[in-house]
Image 1 (cartoon, rainbow, N blue to C red):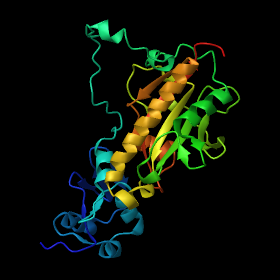
Image 2: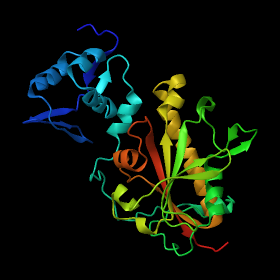
Image 3: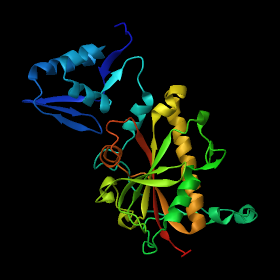
Image 4: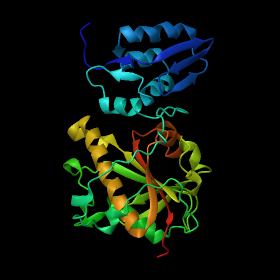
Amino acid sequence: MEVKERLYMFEASLKIIHLTNTLLLENDFYRIELEEFPSKLVPYLLELKDQPKEIEQIKKQLSNEVVQTFITHNFLVELGNANFSEHFHRRTSMGINNFPWIINEKNQKIKLNYEKYNLIKYPTFISKRKSCRDFSYNDCLLRENELIKILAYAYGYIRDGESRTVASAGGCYPLEIFIGIQNITGFEKGIYSINFHDLSLQYISNVQNFKEFFVGEDINYDNVSCFIFICYNPQLNQQKYGDRGYRFALIEAGMIAQNIAYCVNDLGIEMINLGSYIESEIEGNLLNFNKEKKWIIHCIAVGGRSDVL
């Protein structure tokens, strides 16, 4: 079939299941129920897998609500113009209640030749680098000025109102940081955004239990002082770099994480880079990205102070 512009098809992994008047849409990461879905339109959906149509034709057959569901969850892929970075993000996201790796409890220590290492003088903020899972110093709560310092090191401005603490491809700076505050002196528990121009925090919404947005049992989430969510807005750099902008964003997020590690270790604060967060839950329910095209690409848990400053 000759592919023309603006033709759409369903994502290859999508399953369409029809039960009475309820349509089930499933892939590796989603299960969505559309109630009161007309039976006569099911063959039309199945037909779209083999015979893509223009989006306007699809809208004439299906309600706008259904079409928006397909678009929101990346079920409709525009042929010849698919966003592979979004597809990669969804395919590598955590499925609900799915922890797809096994934690190896064996501590395999490698014997190193320290003859050369002894000649290297690491600065303190590097030599003290470690990951924490217990967050035993939660009784020494972070202060506001400490949190602000960590965020300023992470992604703040360092000169001229343009240059920041990390490099960004094309100077696009497509990342946004949200803070899930759980145990910090003077702050209500909930989600906050940060304005990096004046380093001010803005309260967004309340959160009852942060732990439910993570899987795995090797980390004491309840003792974490705050969660730092690094999120990506593809519109800010993909207009220039296309899907390759996703790669640049991941590199940028890694530099932010390294800056945070330098800062918290210098302050004597506990932290760990987390990979066990549930993207769909955080994006949809915690940060309310349902109507915006933004994705979480990294999360860092920060604990209390091991030294009272």
